[in-house]
Length: 516
Image (tube, rainbow, N blue to C red; front, side, top):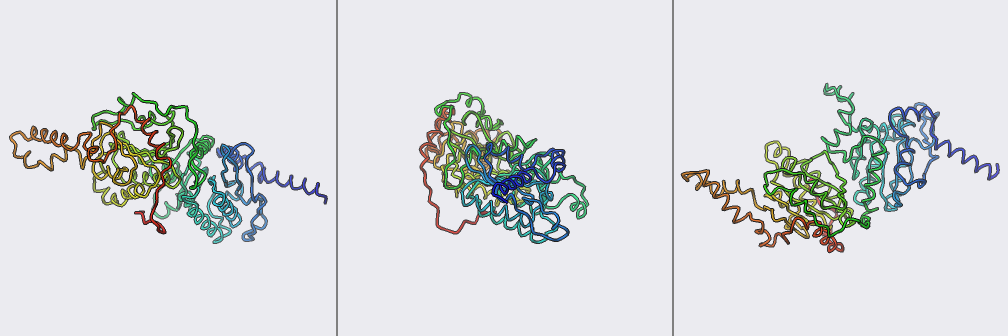
């Protein structure tokens, strides 16, 4: 056979691999409302940028008739391409081949790609649509998952890892997404659970559907496993591209900057009306953030989980920032167990990838109650505290209204290492609210007064005037400046520019021991 003939044969073989097992399998995939692995990769990456590796890989198993079914790719497409011109590694399960189930060859392809991503220092995106371990290959398949988990952990904090759930993900397969930085899910077609509905029914007697057990909305709003949820694959993959545009390639680089058309010195008169001076009145913190960031654009993380805390990626004067903000519109903005875990994880991610942190504070404290205490609010609240204390990226906090008790300290106060602590003239920083403080300090005077209610009001006013006025913390150096709300954006942009060259030293140690 001549080289020309061999080359033509190779082209025919690669085209057959690209088309997949058979047209009927592709039709079945489309009938489920799902795209094929290669269609998904085409949507994720820049046009004609994908380079595939190990397209001709086949398994070598012989059990249960597998020796007669040896399709190329072994059910996973692996390779790299670009997103907005920047290298990204990707693997995509092909549900048309063995239901996307993982076997030895399938796992080794993923292992090799993950090793390449770590070596090259580029993000890794997994497009998940698989049925778990390939039962016919037994323990070999399970060992393949172990190799993936080990590499997920080794890559953690080194390169961004994004999991996109586009189909079922059961058993041990669900742990790899849980180890990555962000999880995207598509409604109705994607599910994640360790034990499926049949096992749940057999063990507990509970009747539940796949979506009720581990659907996208469950994991986005109840369990907190999913960070982003979309109605279709196209919008989901478009958002993955947008997220990647905000992230550095690895932990040795800074996030990509852009030239912003939104002036850094733009004031905002709207901020004077968005936030009520009365600390008991609610408002939507997201409206405040939209006034501050470039072009009002926010990518909110965990939007429907722990909604009393807002975590988002945005830009200020073209520079990517991570924003953590109490949300007074939900539970008055208190910190509870879910909010603490959500915030701690986000702060940790931003610190790992050199993303400056902006913290907007309006917090009445930690959520009181027997349930919170018994479920470990002390330990879980410490996760957010630990993440802030360990962060070495530029950190700026801004107190809008209330900042009470331990929650004030935890929300990146000056005492735990914030580089700049700012406040609006409506700030109230105290051990507790004036009402509660007066009841404790002046309990006997109030009880002995002829008119206890009038005495209580007088003592509340006295406490407020003495310790809760807006300049008390500034007088003691705990606040660097009290700023005009209209100048919030200009002040933050100037502060970020000043901190751009910050270098934070950390103690020499193997690793810390956070309150996991």
